[in-house]
Image (cartoon, rainbow, N blue to C red):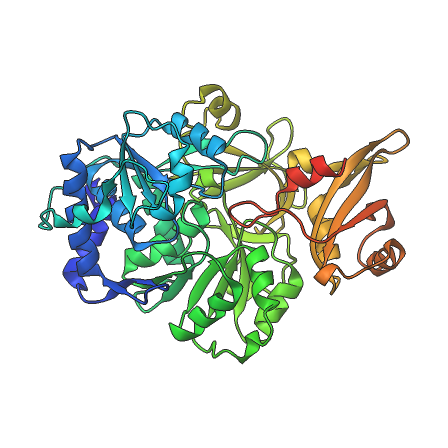
Length: 508
């Protein structure tokens, strides 16, 4: 089904709206129309083909949020090749592991990462540099030469179920796992966002989350390019600049993880920006705290939660705007149009309303498995096509899904099940708490006791007694942390999420 290929979709947009702005680069203010993006991606596709890149070949590398990445993405789609953007915040050793896992046919990188690339094992791999070489010069071809190739139309590869993008999980429970996402996965995830978030060609988004993360690539970014909207690329996230972009470009809908959104509302004077065009903010990757929703609600902007994983091309659940304020933070809404979901107990039987179990997903947005890991794939994809997320959830009587956290993270203390996310949400409601990680520590009397590591505003001191007093009306006492450690800040990953496992290991 060639028509589901994003290379084909771009070509259609270039026919209908050649002069409409597809992508804006915030750093340069350069505007790239659908016509220009089509022509450049054709040139790049020919340049890749000239280097022997074709259907099934792998192109990987290091990119910030840049126009070059999207030109390359559409080019690889047209050829039927696979693009794998890596998390450039990883160490050289970690990136070397990913490179070996992918076995790329071509490696493309921005010159700012030249020092890192110098330490990678790329013997025999063609390399291409975007930008001027640095002092730590790597032997690589210049990217600008790609634009010299013919920009006329070329045939677009077929292969609905073939991989288009290879993204890696965060690796919070071990080595990152490669997830090949097919043209089918991207297409149906995009259509789901178009339908369920009611996107149109009039919409503008800012992509602040990194494109090596499924949320940065696929929440609003590809869906808006699908319908002819405009995407503003923030090269790297900066909270003050994010507000400036929202105002300057009349952004209508945007996505960010709650850590980023919290950083934005901590910017002094943020309410002074003209945000009259902004309609919807989607938070994902972590629970969206009630206070954060209230902050946006106070300026008549809906802030809603979405849920998804790399393995589900991100889009699985979303809380519609009309339910944003009436549902608790752990509510991630209902399924997207093209997604099936259910909650099952340990025996595999489907849970009833209000009963907790493991959340499963199935549908055309769900990947087929992990790259080169057949045993791990068999563990989490069953014979009926259900993907086992490893997350604890329940469904209420109205069909809304409530996420409680990871199965492995649940605390059992004195025979009671305690969900860290519930305790963390209560801690986040304290005005001086900026971050919290809650976990269980083995205890001879209780089995496990609740422990919290808490970051506060500007390192402000809060006594454990004062914090427990604050929680008194918000949590049952058996859920209160028995031990609290205060820190200046919490480590975050390349996607901005708190590195939970690192915190647990450091404080146990």
